[in-house]
Image (tube, rainbow, N blue to C red; front, side):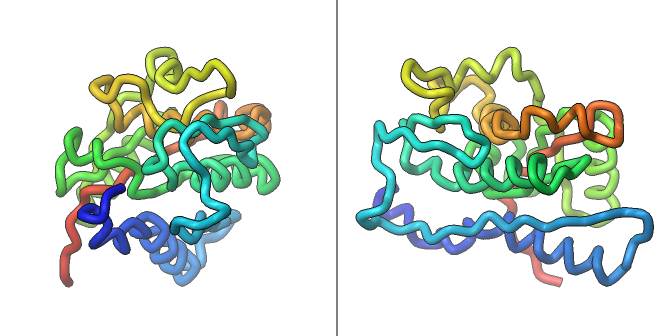
Amino acid sequence: KGGAGMCGMKTDMGGAAAMLGAFRALVTLRPTNIELHLVLCIAENAVGAAAFRPDDVVTAFSGRTVEINNTDAEGRLVLADGVAYASGPLQCADVIDMATLTGAQMVATGRHFAGIVSDDEEMESAAVSAGKLSGDLVHPLPYAPEFFSREFSSPIADMRNSVKDRSNAQASCAGQFIANHLDAGWNKRSKRAGGGGETGDVAGMEAREG
């Protein structure tokens, strides 16, 4: 990312901040018969000797290898580790993540609607309904692994970290990258048929007072 694009990047922690606030509200409400976990995917984002470089290959927590073809698509790497941890060691039945995942979300749903990618229609509908009630509006984006997984194909790793074709539903593809790191046994362990996974992209959401 060039210097002109760095100012204001403090808002790139918006997804983690929103999840922390939501978790605090849930804990305050003390819901019964449900086990909740919060995984905050936080890392220092700075140039240094340990920073990855273009063409590096890294191994994610999921065990899958990722070829770096875009150093500005860096947040998704720690987010991928988070969903791998939630769906693996924590054995969560449902996994919901929220992040400022990609600027392509603004192209798809604008500044007033977050974009969501979900493999569970029930969870997707619940998110849309909750958004209408709270004013935190969301709009579903296509979920189609059969179309989007190939965007990350790599000759030397399990996947690349960014798409080949930026005009092919890039926001949905970013969500697919995250889904690629769900634990292989996650759906089999889920208490609900198939489990539910949902990615919320709030990259372009405008802050509102009150």
